[in-house]
Length: 252
Image (cartoon, rainbow, N blue to C red; front, side, top):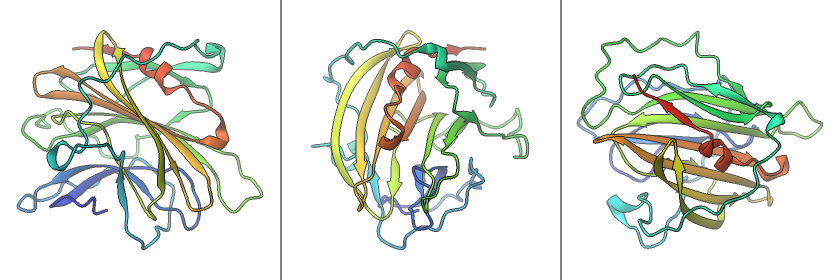
């Protein structure tokens, strides 16, 4: 999908609603026109028919044009504390994708979220060069797909993790363009490191809303971790901030 930046977009799929006419939501890393785009690695077996309308990349952040469009506000306040959810309905998860920078990441998610089965996907070799400007990769994704209903669509929620060389918020490109109805930035300690966090809500043409929580934080010089959770408002609140607070990054 074209995210209005020059070059080809290398995308990992995320989706908010499995409607026949719903747009596909993607988290993208641009690849320059003079570099061959890497083969897309799509973490889903769902099939979507995307609307042919123009897409828009979110979150829409104020007063940050051009190359700074998805950088965090360095003066954002600390995220407000909130009572933890009933953790009895949550379970521990661990990333399985390997990286020379991270042995694994553990965290809590509601029990309804299931890890995407990556066993049938080709695994990156141990010699994969995690250097340069364009090596961002997925560390895993977890999905909650609403049981079949009598409606024409099924609601979908997801949570994903990435590692790469770019320090910025993860983005989603949505078509047809929804309305961003709120936006909030804050900072939160994730595994002992202060992360930049953005919370925003998108509303589609029929009034259905999806909540997003995105974050990124530095692991070491030139290496960044990022996370993105999305959940339809109809599912009720999913405390992705609690998921971030529960994270432990295990180094090699």
